[in-house]
Amino acid sequence: MSWNAVLTGKQRLLFLEGKDSDYFQSYSRLETHMNMLRDSVRTEAFRDAILQNRELFRDKVVLDVGCGTGILSLFAAEAGASKVIAVECTDIADLAEEIVRDNQKEDVVKVVKGLVEQVELPDGIKQVDIIISEWMGNALYMEAMINSVLFARDKWLVRGGLILPSSGNLWIIGAHDPHRLANLNFWSNVEGIDMSCVRKPFSQEALVECVPIQQLLTDECFIHSTHLAVAPNQPVDFRSNFQLKVKRTGIINMLVLYFDVLFPAGKSTEAVTLSTSPHSPWTHWEQTVLHLDEPLYVRSKDRVRGVLSMAPAGQDGRCMNFDLHISFRGDRTRVESFKSFCSAR
Image (cartoon, rainbow, N blue to C red; front, side, top):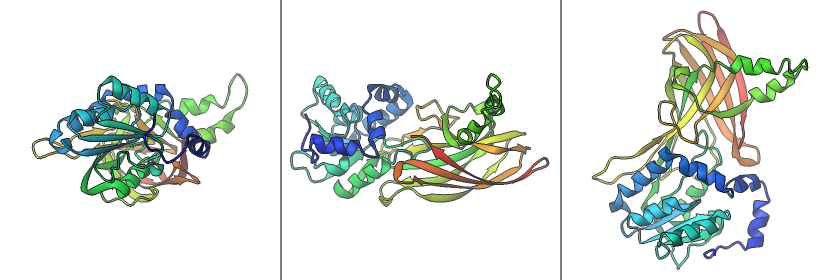
């Protein structure tokens, strides 16, 4: 069922049993792909970016990195690509191949089962004109799939070729979680049992939640960006200063991370942007939340300053660690704090 994968089935199994096994197993489940496909904001952004730019895809060779069920590959074929190579490591590749046949696109779309870092392209193809990939994780860089896209870029993309999406931006905003105190106090007395020791690991994890706009208290601040055409293929590791201007009086007890990505456009079309901001329609990424130990009692026009660092968590580059330093001086509180967060995969 696979096309020219370098790894044999046994070799691929041994690789998947390594440190990435949980990651790939999650993408072997149909429910994972169903959740992504049901995210209409995500799927329609890719559809529009491809089908509204047929002049970019016409007669081009396209590589889909991490194709999943193959929907982006089928969009590219519909847009007029001459050949689409759909690379998928998990057993979902077998389903993608069946979906391609059911949609009568097997003459254009070829499914390659294997890791993009370990396969060769079929039919003697040496270069591609366009790379498409839904590589974004929570807080943009979770899962480290961006590195697979950059690997494919360096190995196969023609000079001047396109990557969709072409860039990603990470943002931060201050907010109030009205349930935060109640959630922490819950552990102090669970049917008469003191479980307050649970608080520490609970409070040190970066959580994925949907943050209502009513909870936002500040403007947003740009944190970091990646332009896939020029970014080096190395682990994401950065340290960025930020300053948030308070828009209304309240208590900031969490900082919220979200991202947007931009798709390139032809001369006659507008660029498509996919945003995971709390101000935008819901996506399955939601937002990534960093809860503060010390709440900030803020008034309108106050300034909250800080530094956010993001780096791979030890040997497992698919998880990230966040280091957060907060500096705030207000009428009620003066806070100089430092806190580290780990992210669940």
